[in-house]
Image (cartoon, rainbow, N blue to C red; front, side, top):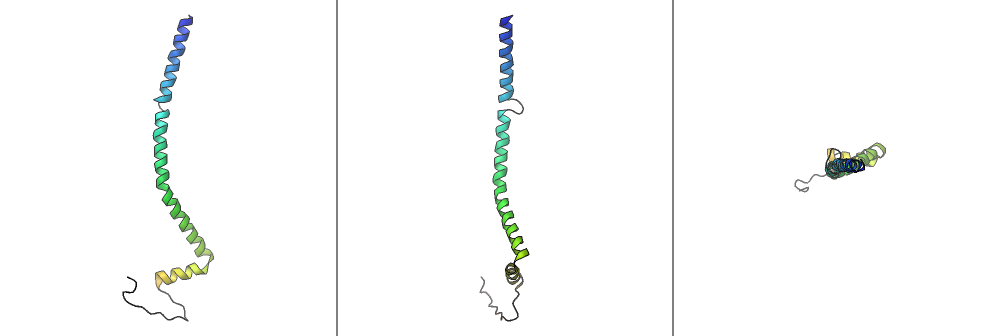
Length: 93
């Protein structure tokens, strides 16, 4: 009787070890998921930086007039009333 109990417990231990290392939700699957998470984190890092830059630009545009003026000058070519604008062809190249 005692021999069968020891044999049964050893079989149960082997089954649990199999599930731990090779079964669903085991160590092997965990490693695969961890590698996918690491790859996604690496892909997200530049996007987080870009979002931070855009958030800072939005905050600056909402609060300060200097950013609005700079944007108007660079994107639309606007000048103030007390300024003179001289355009030199080929100077920006």
